[in-house]
Image (cartoon, rainbow, N blue to C red):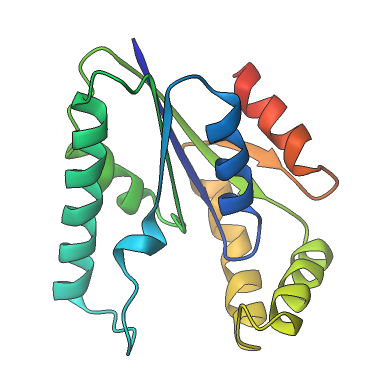
Length: 164
């Protein structure tokens, strides 16, 4: 049985770092970061671009699911609304798959600290702090396993995910 990990969280919480490490820890694993499917300049959010991105994500994930060499398929993205998770799941062939949907969360101070580090390194823009903090409460309403990473290292977070 294939294991599918859908890992959401707000910007800066550590999704990519955790998933990159998880990919190394799991056997026969592949990782898709949803941001790779929406890397555009200018970044435009509208009905058309949302539809294309979800379609691209689902197409890639289904290809990984159908590939015989992968036992673990890992996906992360900012999934702050249940409808995003539902759209993705409803378009995947999950026959013989064990799906784990998780949200990485952390407290406001830790999130701000992580984002300020990214801003200082030129990875993110200053406005990301407000947007990310505003989204934190939305994760409580999701039908996902919540993993509070406020005081966890990447390795500790991966250990928790592997134990699920």
